[in-house]
Image (cartoon, rainbow, N blue to C red):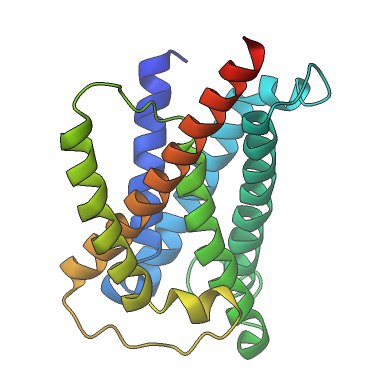
Length: 210
C-alpha cells in the first residue's frame, strides 16, 4: 500500500474514532458497526506498520523515540481494551454470541479505555506532524484557537470523569453536530500538543548531535 493510501486509511480511522465517540448522536447500532470497522482498520494499520515492531529492540533511543514507543504501546493497549470490552457489552452486532454481561461493571472500563484511546490516538497522529518554520504567526493564532476550543471540548465531553472510571452517563445537552465537532476539536488539541512536544524533542536531539 502506497503512502497516499496509508494517509487515507489514517484519515478514515480518525473519522471513525470521532463517530464512535459520538455515541449519543449516532445510537447504539451505528456505534457498534463503526466500532467493528475501526477494529478491522486498526488491525490493518498495525500490519502495515509491522516493521516498527521489528525495530523496537534495534538502534539507540532518543527522547523522541522513547516518547513514540510509550505512546504507541499505550495506544495499542487502550484500543484493544476498548474494542474488547465493546464486543463483550454488545447489544446488537455480537449480542447473539455473547449477550450483555455485567454492563454496570464493564461499561466504566469500556468508556475509560475509549477516552484514553482517543487522546492517545491524537498524540500518536500529532507526533507525525511537522511544524513548518514559516507562517509562525498564523500557526500561533491557530494554536491558540485550538487550545481554547479543545479545552472547552475536554470538559464539555466530561472527559475528566471518563478517564478515571467515573462514567456519569452524562447527557449531551447540545446538538449531535456539536458533539461530532467537540470530539474533533479535542483530538485536534491533543494532536497539536503532541506536535509541539515532538518538535521540541527533535530540536533537542539535533542539538545534541552537533
